[in-house]
Image (cartoon, rainbow over all chains, first blue to last red; front, side):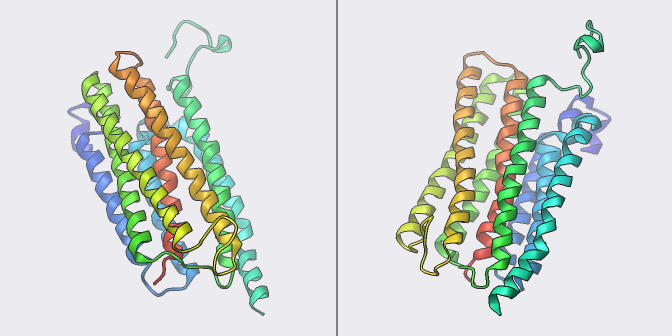
Amino acid sequence: MSSHATTHTEEAEHGTIKSFAVIWIILLVFTAIEVLLAYEQITPIIMLTALIGLSVVKAALIIAYFMHMKFEKFSLFLTLFPMLIFCICMMFVMMPDSMRAMLMRTQ
Amino acid sequence: MSGGESVWNGGGSPYLVNSKKFGMWLFIISDALTFSALLMAYTYLRLSTPNWPMPFHFSPSIIFSSIMTFSLLSSSLTMVMAVHAMHHNNRKSTVGWLLATIACGSLFVILHATEWMNLIHHEHITPSGNPWNEPLFGATFFGITGLHMTHVIIGVIYLSIITIAVSRGKFKYEDVEVAGLYWHFVDLVWMFVFPLVYLMSAKV
């Protein structure tokens, strides 16, 4: 991407075919890691954290390159995403309660 | 950027994107909140239920859902190529890439429907009940994947309309780009549904 930026400004604004292919391969590798992770014997909460972490990276790659956000004006990003991330973080407030509910059910 | 009008009369463009694209982004953000609320509710129930059903055998469920993930990811790549071709004003190539995207999306829907039928007929999991007596599993599974599949089906119809219009010489670059945004969003949602719903309930 960066090597082309100086020579083809128009290509740099929209990404190159090579950069799309590289992102696609990275996404496939991450998916493969997730599938392998599902067969490891780890507690649900750790597996959940690892899977969500990998998925967030994948989502960020899709938004930045496939959905073109990296090449948009920064003001568009600021308008759309901090609000979304904040709302999603607010939903996490309820998560600790799920562990408490689990303990109450097993007792 | 529209030059003539003053900012107070609706001129100017603070984001330097056209209104169709901005509208699609606003829709995507609100739809993302819908899906995150559903997935959050699912995760809560998943963690708070001691004996959550783990019905997904490696074959066929995990293999099927992995192929579905692969086809959606590939459809995103072909969609990007369609937008790229349209940007270079190559309508013939755009139609080809759009058809490839539709094919991948249709493959996803067919595999998903097969997977549902397998669960209903062989594992006896329905939206209201299952052998483990945890009706919440069926409710959340069919609710989330059903809503996502609805989005994919709408996306396939949307892309078909765009393909027909582009092949007839109608529509501009921005229309294909906006359709691409929607399609990538559908792909993005599956990137969360697949690990949370399938991989978290894989039968080891």
